[in-house]
Figure (tube, rainbow, N blue to C red):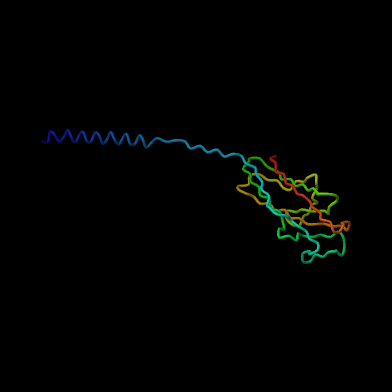
Length: 169
């Protein structure tokens, strides 16, 4: 009986060793994961309009003004334009701003990124800001104010269209 048991045990042991080497060979196999991230330079402009209603100016502002030039802040709920930029480019980008009146000579609109340094909005365009890799969405707030010099006609509704242009440099 011992003679028959020994070959059977040896056979079982051989199968276990052979099976474990096959299993370990399968565990050492692998594969490659490939990720392709496209280059993206994208801009989103917040919705809504910015309005200046001189019939009901903000606190501390009056119309007609005591002297010219007179400066007014928006009376609308929206006080600034929100521009969001997303860039995963390795190169820099530039954001331009342009202004165009619907008709005739409109009052001057000025813009600022900090509410302290103001620049007249021009039809020819100006560099608003520049940047590079944003590591997610980056918000840029553009503040506006109205400058009047006394030459504006009453009863008119002046409209100025503002455009933004984002380009890679």
